[in-house]
Structures are given as C-alpha cells and as structure tokens.
Image (cartoon, rainbow, N blue to C red; front, side):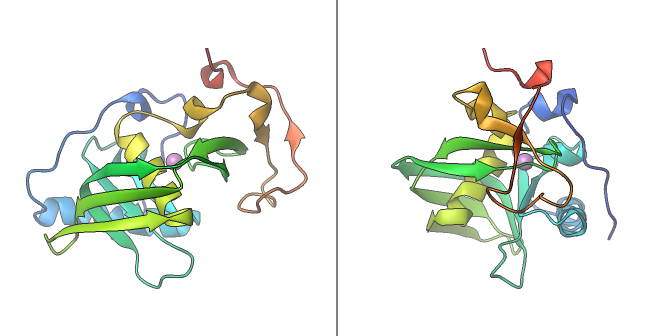
Length: 179
Ligand code: NI
C-alpha cells in the first residue's frame, strides 16, 4: 500500500482517455488499493487512475456514509436522467470549486474488486461522484462543464470540502477557461 502523487491541471495525462482493463489481476488491484490510500489521505470522495498517472479505467470512491471504499474497473454510465446544479471540486484542481450540472439519476455498470459485474442505480452524491470519475477516464474535468466563468471560484484551504462557504470570485487560469 502506498500513497501516490496526485497530478494537477494542466498535466497532459489528465486530458488522455484511459484504456479498458482486461482483467483485474494483482497488478490492477494493487494500483486500485494504492488509489484508495491516496484518496483517503487527500480526503477526497473519489479518484480516477489518470489522476495518479495511470491510463487504466479504474476509479475508487469513498462515500462519507460508507465504511468501505468502492473500487470499479471499466466503469460506465449506461443511462442518465434529469439535470441538477451541484457544487464540485477536484483533487487535481486544488483551491477551486465550481457550480455545474449533473444528472439527477444514473444507471451504472462496472467490475468490482472481486471481479463481479455490478449494475445499480444511483442518485445524489454517489451519482455525482461516479459521473465525475468516469469523466476523468475520458480526459474530462468538471471545469469543462462550467457554463459561465463566474461559476468557478477559489476557496481557501480551510474552506475546502465545505459547500457554499464564503467564496471569492477569482482570476481563472488560462487552462481552465471555457471556449
Ligand atoms: Ni476529480
């Protein structure tokens, strides 16, 4: 088990599409468990393999109300419905949060750490986190979903993780600007 360095914007690997995992053998599982350690250490809700420099379709999640972390190989959002405004942050974009739209409901499929295909419906934070992490595997960051520049703002270290905290509008780095 080890803590891996988390890549930050504008690292090019964050913009690459990750490859499907053929099987989750020891090598893939070790990476997944290292990602779990890394996510927990950073206090994140989720982490995708691109963020630790590995272009494999692997994501890990830690829901605040769950004891165990979730590990999914080849995760896929197979159905979505509705649209809602959410506040989002990302470990690869520290110091920022943004307001974007995510689905209200999703149907998800993936391979779990025991090599079983799992299929379930999700809402709320779980669906938001799954959409965020699957986006990462396709080279997409949440800032790509911003509809207006003012919907991205800076947060101080203490505010991080706190939703709708006294946030200030900020200069947006060029790499984050939306076309
Ligand atoms: Ni992220």
